[in-house]
Image 1 (cartoon, rainbow, N blue to C red):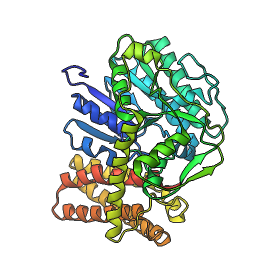
Image 2: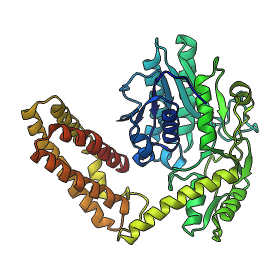
Image 3: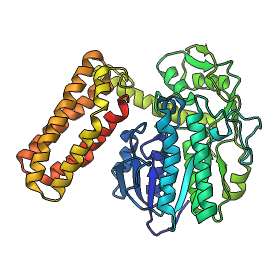
Image 4: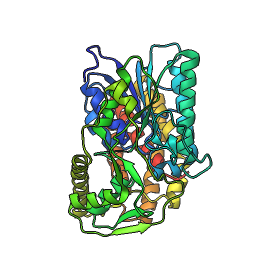
Length: 446
């Protein structure tokens, strides 16, 4: 679907996430200049591997709760953890990302020719008493439950954006996204599709909560991205609008289908139903069909085959790491004291790196040299902390990969200093060191 021949600047917040990265790829293919923003709380730079090689993609490490670094004519706001494991890990950050993020976007867009496409969620309907859920349904949400940081954060963001439209005519377009799946989903995000596929491919029992009779609808990521682009361009827009696939499947039937498509013979492990887990979830997409001519095309079997293929390839790559002597572990352990101590000083390290890079960019040689001493000490301390953490978790491949990347970076910085190549040093600090520190900051406990 072409969106015009004039190159426009698009800001994608949450660009390194599952949905955000797929959206970036599509926008670049459509001819946009794309700025991706992510604080890497749950995003992964690997997701932006293809986009990062595109000349019209620009990545910024930043937080949507802070002043935005760019003005864009079109904004897709995907900045918020979206799986229960991630958004319950830091409820305060989850809720403020939704609410303060919406506020920052409104501040940027007021009085300007700017369209905001805001990723809301089917979670605004809570455990619904109406099935399927139309946009007119107000929902059944527990405001103080374990999931409320996400549910109520998204509901409040909708209020802010809709009030901004009523008061200042800010072009804010709210999209309520239902369960979406596809390549690049995180292995450990707790979503049912990624959990089932990972467990099946690794020969583990598939974990089903409750009796498995609760139902969901699953939309393949390419279909969802198509719908998002249509939301951005339709005129006039009548929101909010549901986007998803209305095909309904019980969790037990999904588990059976995943076992069939992967060829796994592992059993199902039954667990108690989590608090406030919705019993039914299915979008009424009547409005999307009328307004956007939106119709999902990828059926669940085809979409799962594509997703399983992607998961199989990624797991095989990790198996190759094991053969090279590195045992795979999915994430840095968050309960290690060295990492806990590191969390308190990482913001300071980031400021050291930023100020040093700025000095090299502006040619302040003496200042840059002085600041480089501080940066070297900071990175050396970071290496020592990672070594201590590795003593507690010697087989943690993710932790070792971070330290290996840091050691390689220190060597490159040393060579650039020896060559007196200030431009190279600035590039290494901005494009290599800051992402590495952000990755560490996202992994460390508060």
